[in-house]
Amino acid sequence: LNMSQRANKGFESIIQSHKSTDVIAIFSHADIIKAIISHQIGNDFNNYQKLMIDNAKVNILHFKESEMALAGMNLPVSDFTLSLIGKE
Image 1 (spheres, helix red, strand yellow):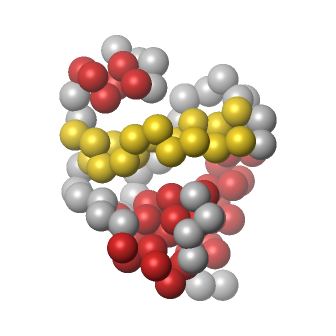
Image 2 (spheres, helix red, strand yellow):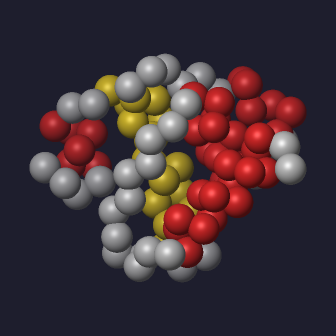
């Protein structure tokens, strides 16, 4: 398996092991995060490097049943960002 396949397999396992109402925090290196977001939005793996993810930033994916929405990407950690995920 390549890096993207391994990252997304692990990500799917984490998502499936939680309830839809859970807030999950996943910490990783930028390339792993880019590969996961790229896959989730249907982007071709070969283009994942076109996403810009800086160090210590927040990326928010909302899942509801089988639907996913990219609610925020490359956001600074702040009270506002934390309020987006419902944790203040």
